[in-house]
Length: 560
Image (spheres, rainbow, N blue to C red):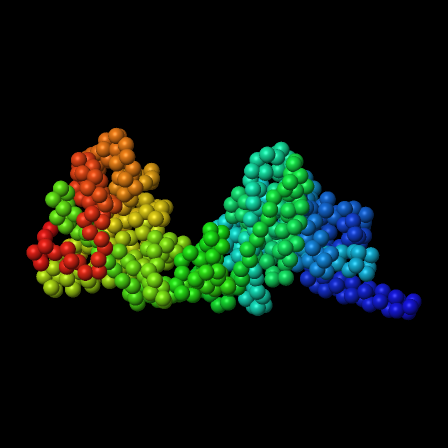
């Protein structure tokens, strides 16, 4: 028996020595910690990292050297190491003299229960694995120390790209702490801060590289992690932590949803867009809301399936594999057709119509809406030319997302299209939609001015839905505005409605802009907008979107 014990002890010491040798190849400082996380051995460049010589570290608590914000994270990581036997590489910082912090330090190691429950930790001054641009742009939730939504998507993208060489697979967990926000509001500030820091530490400690976790709402959190992370156990630990902090001792319910997050060979630019969209959709409904047939229901791998949808969407758009329908806009009060708004129609592989708003939202979030807008322009310029060949001079308004106006390549492509189709431009209008806010109004105004030089009239959609509309109206040279249909509907319910609408119309008329009323569906709404002085109206009262515009001809000749 003594021989067996001696042999086992020798084996463990050899393993420790091998780790020490390898650690010095990899790192700058090796520490051995006892079960209470006190330093029992130190060798290496401790002066530059911890601010003390190796011989001065013995018996001191390792945790005390850590910067305060990293103590919960490291404590939890070491607890995880007790179970897993090792600790993945994480980045931390240490306190140094004169209230200075050390540079970022990479920390890894493992736990040997047969050697006195000791930890063996290797430290090295880290070269940040994230690109400088990404690292500099990261934003965190102050309470938990976790990344915000967009920052999390950036880091997840970087981690997925970095892990391709290893063939690693990842899971993404959305964790909901039900009724967490009301509980925090009831707590004292100090206790609330401690609880928030603890929740953040739990999630970071189990995430890839110890820092791929984020706060996605007041009660929702997300993290990218290895498949073997015990989510059920993590749920219980967080629930216990919250219950202990709850003054009533009741606590909350913690629930999780897990999906695959593997990147395969997705190009980095597309991957970045797909990751953010995937996280948002997973948070919104825990599944994709925009689907072709591949994305029906819960996705097996959210990122890969998002990318499949992006590829499908891009192919259909670039090859003009979509339908268009036309809805009339009529002049008031005689209801004579003035022009048509052209609307896109996509169908999934089962022939089911995909709601247009859902489609546009998807395209904007994955930064592909400019491809749709350009495809619609290509298709309709050809359509106008074909109509002119038949002696039909129908004017059409093509929707352009405000998001697209912020893309110089898109705007230059529009100019190139106009140059090639000058004969059709007299029948073309552009309708600027505000599903995505225009971030650079001055630049957008310059491009709109260029478009108008070709004789193309411009309409601003959904005017009146937000303060930004008024900024657009003052900065951009436009010809028409559309008053949001919901504003008109609400105006029919109050005695002040007519005065409100008339004031909007008068404002527009004062600057030589004509006004269109949207979503007119009843005679009462038509009467209201006519009295308010609207120039045009659109809605089911005058006609639904149709693929064949000749359905609206009265004398088989289009009247302007």
